[in-house]
Length: 434
Length: 186
Ligand code: FES
Image (cartoon, rainbow over all chains, first blue to last red; front, side, top):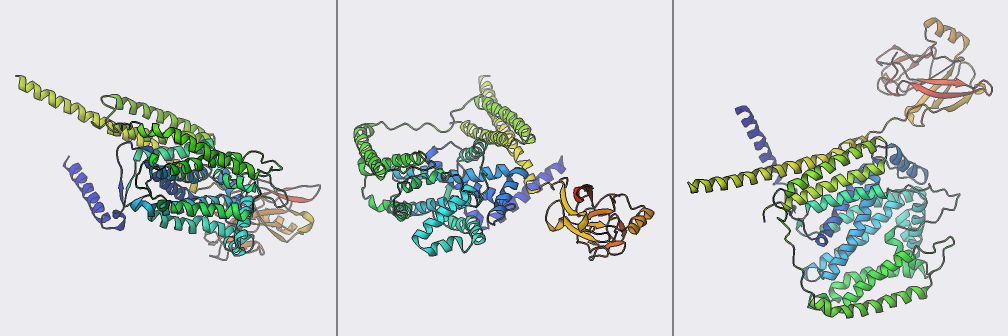
């Protein structure tokens, strides 16, 4: 008995020593604060974006062990090998892909939330600027990622990108692609795995507040959702690019569809492909100074509400419109339609918001639910037991799917196991006395 | 004694709360462990299985490799570790191999083996006289079946099994006995 006690004492001493020395390092100055409560979803979106970035890094690094950055066959074949012959290669690629999708999606909703809540005023104007820049860099990062596969879609995307770069200035093209195919493959790779993530890290450093609040159940939930997404939409491989064959046309990733729709009006590339997105970025960065009002409520600054709503609805319209009539041959989208629909949406949102204003003004403030302590007695125990049972069953499904080589089901069940832990954490937090 | 009763009650309540907390913690721990479990087999990602050398590959036509010559080929892949010799033995050599009891893998006067030394994986020299020599630490293998004659390597060179298409005269590699860089048990 005494021996055991002295052993425990020694382990404690060791832990104390590690803790002490760790506190002397720079890492200790980064404070992560994990609230044990379930916090408001929208205030966690920035955290979710960063989390997706971290997951993309963690899954991207192992991918480096198999990817061969060289044009056509070698790159494509290495990814095919990774997908088909390497254990969990398919899963890792899928998570990497969906982490990038998550970054784009969460950052968009995060920006919308910040816009409508008017959280860009005051000291936060700088964070808003770095946030907009982060959004741009995120999209470039995701884009360079899918050009690396060297399937039909990737080469198509490369050509469009280089075409746009050349419209700006030929020197842009040689910056992005060097001279020749080997250069192109190596540069896209270097940008994707090194240069852009480094820029991103600096911007993240300029965007995060000093102390981070991470909601553990939310974070675990996001990880789980990425696994589930991988199970439902596995990362595509697509046909290998063959210069002899005209590739079948494929629309770009969802976050580029709006530009794609505008390009299909046959307007000059320089305008809709470069000048317009560029102008939008500049305008977005200027919002904290364009918005001079003092009153924070949305109803007190109707023009901003209208701009916000119009942009979102118009963006959704363009995104879906881009997928209609892609052909082949692709039909032109009439410029009159694009402009007309814009004016229509602008008018409609003005009208609707005006109608809603009195109601919004008088809307009773929603009472905040107590976020802790609403699970008392034996209820949390029962729920946790059920969660554990479900997790065990899912693990069984995972192992049998894994043995059969069914990566989709394996990813799906793994995702739900992880989500289970998120739920368990939440229940645990909610079981504290009020 | 009402006071005592009260005390007991409070203590009892605290006790049950205490054990409830412990149970909750325990369940959380189980849930966390269950979540970690599926990540464990992921370690396999870093280890890929060697592609088994069972695919058939045409090496050379019999007319292009006269007796007494050696053809260098790569099998089953095209990497440097796949470097192998296809040797067309003369009739005297076949007789010699039979006399030494090393003719087991000779088909129609041909023998083939991978040439990555089973000692520390150096590529060997081309065959000379009766032997194949490794330049690194002086291993000597038999030219007839790749078995160790002298030197440090623990095992014989892996044999590439052959098939001769009698009508066309094409020689095919069909498989491998033993493992590249590790050798073949004799
Ligand atoms: S590697 Fe061939 S003898 Fe050592």
